[in-house]
Image 1 (cartoon, rainbow, N blue to C red):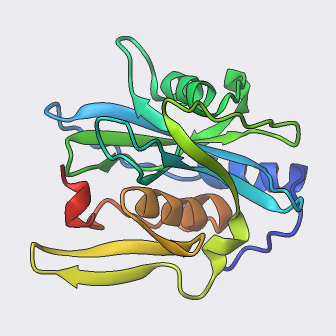
Image 2: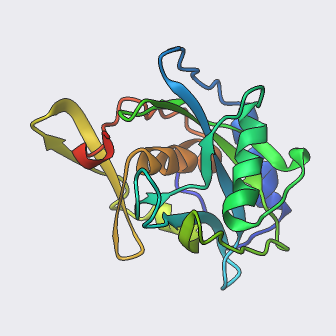
Length: 210
């Protein structure tokens, strides 16, 4: 069911929390993969509409330079996905949140580049002030959650290199690809709509395999 997203308020927080609490997430258990976490931070946009944080990675990074991304990174030794997501959110966009701002988790997403990503949904709140770290982030965006409710989301295509469909989402005048697109699609399906939609089977474009 399509979500109505016109106000950033407690009713949205309660709905997202309830949907995530009722979701039985899938854990990917492959010890060969490195564990990472991303923070799906919910906050009001410049126009006050419910939004999420999306970044463009800095061009001088060693891997995935200039790609669209959700704030996140590899887990440090002894860290939980919650802790890593909050730490990376602070390091990348200057947003420091307490552990009680975590609303829940989505499915693990295994990537072609050797990571198992755990998406952590967090409530950034109306007071959120974003300051991108230039060493990691070229630009930070507040993207309206309503963009995920467009009728052309998601878009799927076939590639000769895989028998799995490649998923993308049209945003900010371009196309966002998996893994980011898969995670954002599940954010819509689970957190906003309350549907137990799986996304780990969606493929990434070949340029993201490295």
